[in-house]
Length: 437
Ligand code: XLS
Ligand code: NI
Ligand code: NI
Image 1 (cartoon, protein in one colour):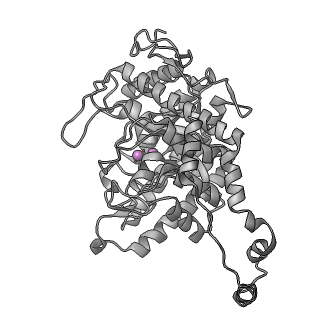
Image 2: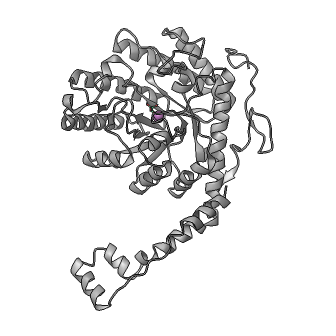
Image 3: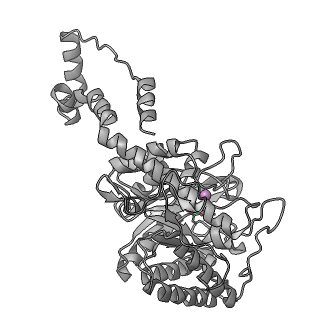
């Protein structure tokens, strides 16, 4: 191993199977195992995120850093050390992807020109490391929420110069994502929202946000970037009202701007919970609307009301979302990015490893259960039967637009129609799901 020595003697993590008691082994994630004819690794396309693993200091609202990392500092030497440690962790875990914000990888300079140069310098470091490894970039993104200048928004700022500054930052972040062969580019509108309408012109801000997204899509095509542009919905935090509330809201926004065929969604489990949805609801809706892009894998505390970004550990719960993803034909260019952080008391290097092992094992278990649901077919058969009336006869005619209200009224009265309900069988279906787990 050698290298920075940060992870000490931790060897690359291997699959040892469900009976293994080794906490440094995968018990369910067997990357080459075929699930529905596809390798587990290719189903899950797991990514390690830079920000929570290497930039988060352990701070919370009441206390500062608890993680004492040798690369905490805002000079380029620290950024290079951070990159070395990051790739050592990618080697240990063997996940196929990673993700980052521009500000995670390199410090802000005295000017945007300098900041952008810093980002490109570390991107060059990445490019050299990628040459000898199989790990790839799932997506890059720009941090348009941390700096003071963005307190009133980036694209939705009342000052057009902040919009321009954000555009300049995003241009650079797309350039490096393109250079590194990124499969997607993400936009999470961290400050695109508002605290009070007293100081906010909502109509203008939505128009600005639409313009910004169009510029991003135009630029992507201009430079020949083949990755998918993704919007990550979140209902609140940091602002009280975020414009990209949930999948439905984002879809409406895309439609309004004619971008529904250009942009997809990156659905975060915890954000679904904050929007009072289940994760499987958000996934299923995105799939139904044709905008399912990628996933930020984590879990949220159900009581706290803020974004807790914990590692996933509930396979039964995730299995329904995995089922929806499999039914949709998978995530395509997307993947499962662990937008999750170890708790602030879990400050040792090995905690980062435990966290990711648990996360990917949980996803793997959920995937296997979901695949069993698909193979068995009982859930699909139930749905097909429940809606069968729409596939033929009058149902098909109605859907095809060949029946008006008057024609339906005439038929219902003439035939004295008196439809009888049939059971929704919820408990039967829930029991069925439990059989696959
Ligand atoms: C924050 C978001 C953020 C995005 C990337 O809540 O999840 O981490 O994934 O900007
Ligand atoms: Ni996220
Ligand atoms: Ni989050």
